[in-house]
Length: 133
Image (cartoon, rainbow, N blue to C red; front, side, top):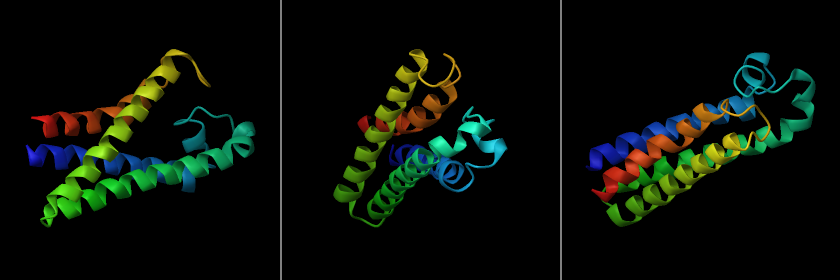
């Protein structure tokens, strides 16, 4: 089961690194802010600080998974496993929040945020299930 935990935790980390790049580095590109985040170009200056900060939040979550898996893989199972499980819970619960925000149509039409909620929450959920088994 450790392989499943590591695989899906690392998929979650990779997802968060990609989102970091979109939010903190590439957000001003129309292909990113308009097509991925459904943000009008006119609104980019108003949300740029938010996107930058949230991008780094995603990077820090990914770093937690990477450090946790590295510690776990090098024999420090208690610390590494604890870090991986904590960050996976954080990611999964953040996905639940995104799902609720989508159902409430916060900031975009209802149903258009499901991909983000699943991307945020599903890989860490699978890792958590693997850890529980």
